[in-house]
Length: 110
Image 1 (cartoon, rainbow, N blue to C red):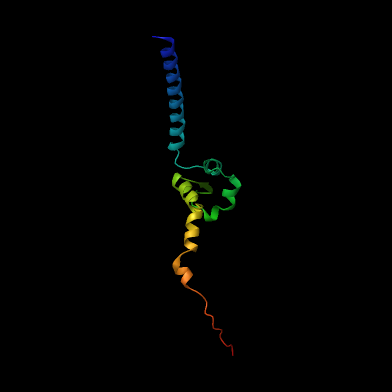
Image 2 (tube, rainbow, N blue to C red):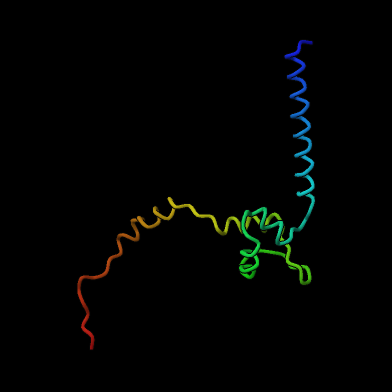
């Protein structure tokens, strides 16, 4: 075996070790059924305080006094705050809305 092949083989073994390590950490996160405020906030990349302030309007689970989030809850929260600017512009230029105009006649008030 040449030194180039040995170097490539060592690099592949190192890469495989990193992939195995990442796979193990993903499995640990996926096996948990519920997440608390801190972990949910990290997953959504938002401050924990934001979640706590808006909990009454967000999907969540309540186990006794403990608030918990599932993967489905986190996806729902993310979808609730999805913004697509081009879609709004298309809605505003809808021909149905442009056809409705106020009358030029004024009404007499009695």
